[in-house]
Amino acid sequence: MLKGPFLSKDFIGANPNYETSKIVLLGEPYDCTCSNRAGTRFGPQAMRLESVGIEVYSKYFDKNMDETMFFDAGDLEYPFGNAQKMLDITESNVDCIYNDGKKLLALGGEHLVTLANVKSVLKKYDNLALIQFDAHCDLRKQYLGETLTHSGVMYRIAQLIGYQNIAQIGLRSGEKEEFETAKKYNTLVKEKQQLDRFKDKNIFLTIDLDVLDPSLMSGVGTPEAGGLNYLEFMEWLKYLKDFNIVGIDIMELAPDIDITKTSTATACKIVREALMLL
Image (cartoon, rainbow, N blue to C red; front, side, top):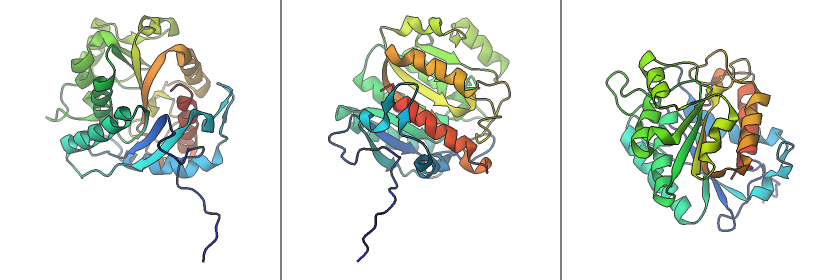
């Protein structure tokens, strides 16, 4: 009989008991509307495997991952090519997490999945705002005739919570119309203090990893030069520690594009730091 020990398939630092956990790590491996380089459906599993190489201690928040009490639920299974069914599956499962009194930390997967996460959180929390870290506006009403795409997810979310409840950080790519919309509704944020208007709100935090510069994060579907470096990004996260973050997703890692695995290792560290905010 095999005796082990065996390497866990869970993200490092996970609590094995769902009932005693406060946070649920959920893989959302969907990438059927990716408009450039596909492969984000492999992101959640790649992060789990790579996570064994990081420390469980966050020097930025002076806390160990296991103190956050998170449970790794594994990956959802999605049909190919059916965006609406994917959203329905995601929403119903995230509903269960919040109905059980826990919070979500989701790993993508493409950014469209965030729409389902937000719809579910809205059932539990009112007065909701969304903070988006991203290279792209994601404010397209449609792309190649499709309305449900990763390039239009923020437009869809704005219809649910209003543009006045959206803050966008790191944007540097999009159509002229998208930037005009962002300027019209004052969603663009360049200074941390601009987020203070959300201090009295419940906040969903969505992180598209292409907000980081591709010199550090090349393993994404649509890399854009001129992004944040890691320390700049961490300063933003540390600023959010006193805000009421009720859910987070970390999206758009395409691990096979970066054969050095630097992108995946960096994504794992962002998962660690994000846990500290919940």
